[in-house]
Length: 195
Length: 213
Image (cartoon, rainbow over all chains, first blue to last red; front, side):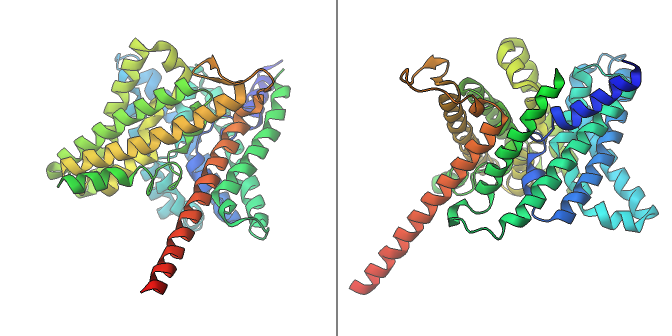
């Protein structure tokens, strides 16, 4: 298998086999909170993709070129979260100045992303798995695609569920979680692909 | 004052239970509850960070400029998360390995940042301690109940000790990812159902007393 094949496998692994929402349980707050409308979940997906890839690249350089040479590894958690918070602010300002259309599409979701655990989680996983820069980019891209797929799936199902006739106390979150359980069961099937 | 302390403490346990009512901080709750021991460990780690960051956010109120309060909260929470992470990896390496990245991810737990912003930043130290303890108890009972349920149904044990009769076949799905979603869905459903019942009872009582007077 050449290097392209390896990267493609990593991409499939990150997006489907090891789906960030259904298998790793990250970013659940936005997963249950943002999926009541289909458009909103699309905007959130784009914003997360953008920030995850950028944050992964920046934290890669910070970890290997600043923290490791200076022997400051215990500052990993604080350094990463501050970098992500600053990056989100920066991205928001740049987008507001340069592209009003893009800002309208994903602007309101950007502040929420700072505390989105998928992004910080991906940066930690990158370090734990000792990926190189190319793998970091592909992995974070795959994770964000998987996240967007999960959001869109649930949003589409929830639009249908609004019209179904069910007991009052199952409406809303309980039904969302039962549905997610069934979706997770489907994604469990992809585990067979890993072998 | 004792009454105010008590009211702030009880608030997080049922009425504003962070996990089951407000639906925040779900990631760690669903991810680590494959067995009861992990649930308890995660609950304790969370409680430590929650209470201490509430205390320090409240202490730092006079010197916190309003515009940069969020980065300051994050540094306070990050400090305690780092302490937890390092202490656990030194003294409880097995548990630390089982909980994985969810210990460092306490730093972005929405409950802690949410309480720092909504409560500790606006209240004195004593009330912040009460709030932190209450939220911790609310989180702790939710995570242990879910972990116990999943371990019981998924592997038929509690804390690793077999407790079910031999004819019961454990459903492996409950310790795999789908079981986490089903477990919390069931818990929230049951909670909603009991709240509805209590409300109905209360309104019935009201009608009856009204009739008597």
